[in-house]
Image 1 (tube, rainbow, N blue to C red):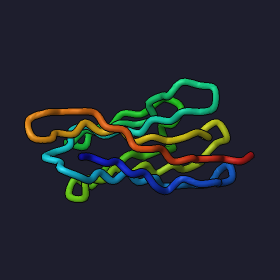
Image 2 (cartoon, one colour; image 1 turned 90 degrees about the vertical axis):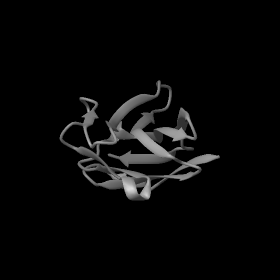
Image 3 (cartoon, rainbow, N blue to C red; image 1 turned 135 degrees about the vertical axis):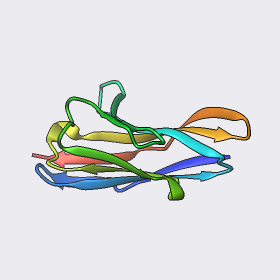
Image 4 (cartoon, helix red, strand yellow; image 1 turned 90 degrees about the horizontal axis):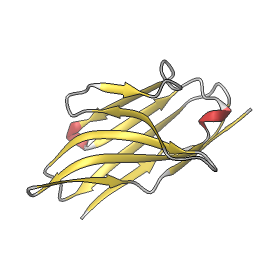
Length: 119
């Protein structure tokens, strides 16, 4: 059984910052890529940022220069530092991870954490 638990969401004014965390727990052998997605009301879920086990990162154009993804492999945790937040960053943020359990690799999702940016 594997769980991804996000935390750190909340209400912030435009221009402010938030730091999201995603902690993986359970019978984990190793974790490959981890990523953050978001879903705004009435819109499809979209990739915000991803990070490989080696630390290579990629970002959506809309967040480049403002968001930073990182991970602590010893803690099975990924982070998303969000600066200069805009109202259009509002949405539910989900963590996704590619996790090896025994001999299988599977993708897991967290339950999501709400981020609301007021103008």
